[in-house]
Length: 356
Picture 1: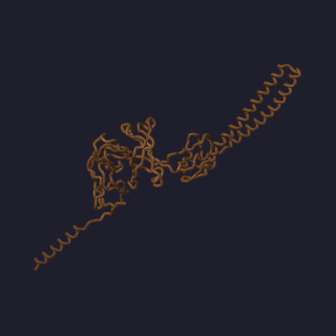
Picture 2: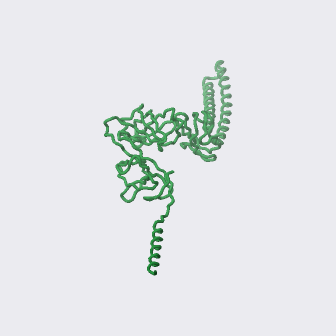
């Protein structure tokens, strides 16, 4: 009987131990953002572009002075000729008062010299004065006339400078940036306000010298937003023939179709795909991923991808060329993989995740 009791206790102990081993601690999942790799053929050239207005004015001042009044805010629509900024012109007012006083004095001297010149001219006709006396009076008249004209010019110049303190919109558009505050000092060469002409958006991008020979105005390109939510065809409208000012890269302007204009905003980042002529290279798929998504451990490089059962899986990769903010993947990744690009916390291999 004692033996059976011991056996029963042993069985209970084994069962309770087994139950403890089966318990698992559930970890909270981490919210993450994921993207799919960009896939294209190597007969395409992919560049990063920025959407902006076809006509942009960065408005400054020709005079140094304190900002007295700002009449616009960022995002405001303005019409051509609208007053944007007023700059204090107290010094110019003082200069104008002085210039007008000099003009009054010069006019008075001119009026006297003009009367003298007329009087001596009549005396010379009656032979009541010598030619030398008349010449002196005549020269004085010419001098007073020149002094009066110089004084008039000084008044006009001050008035022109005063117009520089009232900065107006050169065309109708939207205020994209206000770079100063009331009371701050404005100086020549500094942008105060930026205005973009509405209704005509373009994409600006750059391309290297090895490819520029294949890019011509009228060429059709594919444009894709960074999140791939917007894809459309567009055409090359302009290309630069010099790269001196752009560090070896040639500037390309892409005309955006009218049907897409309202869907774009200035400053939006896009990818632009240029298809090169056949025969330049063998066609095969190329995979690009953002450089910011790469995880480095020693000499190894990889990315975290989201598994089907919502776990972070570390995938080691063999990487190729770096192009702007992207890097080419030679092996280790499929086009359908979901790459984790941002998290609020540090993740590891096997971390539970929730896709935003």
